[in-house]
Amino acid sequence: MYNYFSPICQGHIIKKELILTHEELEALRLKDLEELEQEECAKKMEVSQPTFHRLIKDARKKVASALIEGHALKIEGGNFAMIGETMKKQCACIKCGLVIEKELGIPCRKLACPKCGSRMIRK
Ligand SMILES: [Zn+2]
Image 1: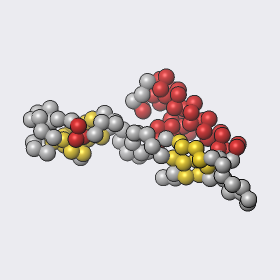
Image 2 (image 1 turned 180 degrees about the vertical axis):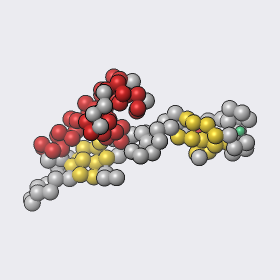
Image 3 (image 1 turned 60 degrees about the vertical axis):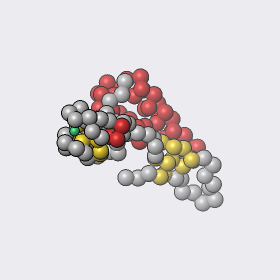
């Protein structure tokens, strides 16, 4: 996956590096590349529509600013799964081996096994 974009121009000095989060990138991908409806995009990303709207707005602004004003774009951050990975992560119980699906952004180690109450690890 590409994670850094920078203008190439002799003598050009990058004045600013804009950070595009993985969420913002995914929002761009779903809305502008796959041309899905906003409602569908929000659903796929498991966020509310206002949240999705904010993500896409910020993403477009950063991309436009980078292209027009000659800033570098760095893709990082966010708690969203990388493109190609599944949206839901799985955790496994260290004691009984029970596998559960968890919400994004919650580490497995913070969860307790619903069956035996033991610690969970990332599967
Ligand atoms: Zn268990």
